[in-house]
Length: 113
Length: 113
Image (cartoon, rainbow over all chains, first blue to last red; front, side):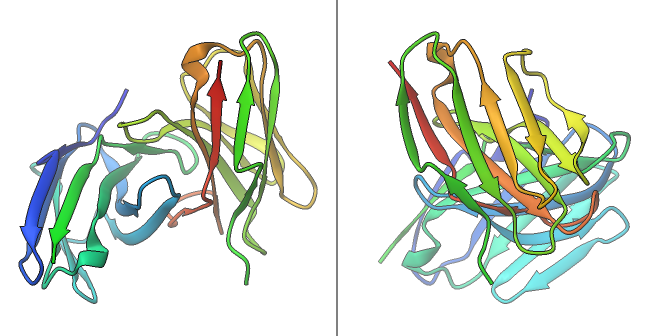
């Protein structure tokens, strides 16, 4: 079963606009990670945010985490055509051994030039 | 340094056959995880191996098995293939057993006829 639920499922924006996607999860977590996947390719790690962190930045990416609401958001600022991809959140369960990640269904982002 | 490499990239099998997928982790990474990604969905965890021992298993039937070798490379085996096993199989490596980003290969696209 998938723990994370991304919202929206799909997003279409113009180049230069910001893109925001949200993720909700159900269990206690050690960390939450965001990944990008271009069509038919592997996943690229974007950001890892630990359960005791509230916000993290990496370049044009900003991730927030609200453990009280069991939710996270990913903001991509000044989007580019190359940002067109599917974005997945994944959680590492605090009660599970190892590094098992539970993924949501993803948000498909289309950035139009 | 080379990233995670998987072979083969594509594979076509028929129902009832058996398949072996291979993964080489990033140099120095001792943890390897396997995921199955059905078209249009997020990846689902199958196995994690760390230091050649199984450290986690997802909700997959016993037809799925894996192992990790002394050089930390890994194989995923699937017996008695079903049509529903058609998917992208992703391998990911990380530097430790938990709380670390996972680095994915480009996957093996398995089609069952």
